[in-house]
Amino acid sequence: MKFIRSVLLAAATFIPFAGGFAFQSPPATAFLSRSGSSILRTAAANDDIVADEDKKVCLITGASRGIGKCIATELAKTGQVKIVINHIAPEKENADAVVKDLEDMGVEAMAVEADCSRPDEIKAMFNAVKEKFDRCDVLVNNAGIARDALMLRMKPDQWQQVIDINL
Image (tube, rainbow, N blue to C red; front, top):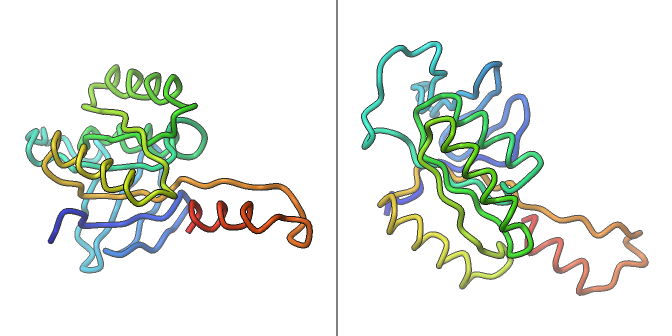
C-alpha cells in the first residue's frame, strides 16, 4: 500500500528519511528521493503552478507549536503542499491557529487530534487524512516529549511515555 510514500524524521539541516534525504535551504525546504528526483521544490525556484491533485499531502506530528509549526510553515512556503497538523487535546487552540496561518498563506490545511503513543488514535488520524485527501505523501515524525529527570529517578511509566511517543 502506497498511502505513505516518504517519512521524514524531525527537522535538521540534512536529514535522511525512508525515500532519500531532506535538507533545509532558505527560503524553503526541499525533499529528494533516493533517485535524486525532487519531491518538493521551493516556489521561487519553480514558477509552474502546481495542480491541486499534484500537491503533496504532508502530515506533521506535534505541529501545533515549536519545530513542528516551523516545519509546516516552511513546507507551506513551497506552495506545493496540503498540510495536516497533528496535535494532542490540550494543544487544539494552537493547532487551529497554525491551520489558520497556513490557510492565510494559501495552503489547504487541517488539524487532527491524536496521541501518537496510542495505536488506535494513530489509525483514526490516518483515516481522517485519507478521508479528506485520499493519501499521505510525507510523514514528519516530529512529536516528542521530555520527562526531565535523571534516568535513575525516572519512574518506569515516565520512561515508557517517552519511548512510546518519541520512538
